[in-house]
Image (cartoon, rainbow, N blue to C red):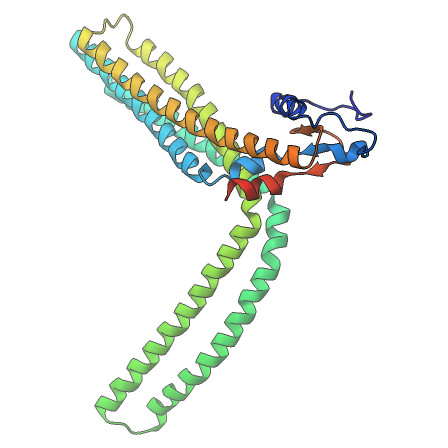
Length: 313
């Protein structure tokens, strides 16, 4: 325990900040410049800061490509083993397809369940955010419908009451269709605007869910990949791979490893940027320590938004 703050959980990041700030000469505060302990402690929401990094969305896309590449590599490896086995013994193709389909269904089912679980956790926030936006859309739709319903009614009335020539009749029908199209386009544009506003309001929560979903997908891929490997070994007992097949499998594995290394490097760079900016801000604010994880309410300076502003410059 330091500074009378109970149950404080220190992370390596926090320790690094302490060391850097101490080296810079800001760790000790003179009596003349002394401040209360609450003003020398900083906190930062690392997940929020990382997800706000300009390259974070690109990293998410690359991470998704990595997951797809892992799955494809598993399928290709499975296919190579299958071909080798076919040269040595007769296989039951239906059993192989059934196993592959089973694993795919397991993955999709668990991912769907996880997504529903996470979305349920923010359901109250979603409903709270949707209510005023729904009212905004309904008011707008009411105004648009009243405006266009009047115009459409007049045109329909002309068709029924007035005796018009065939060309005039076609012109009126064209105007009716054009008005309906215009009305639908306005409502659609407004719905897109409302969706964007809702997305913006929920962006922090959705970013957190994206992070958790990616972590879960990675974990699930490993688990199912292990099952597939075990299943393949069970289906291909005693298979002796040729040197050509061994090289091909190694090539596939190297491709996956390279992609994982590239994504890790990108993520490490994102974290490095966040840490660097946090250190700069901590020094400017004359903070003794910055906590990245804490389990109780404390009186401290939250530098998360300042860090986000800096990394977006």
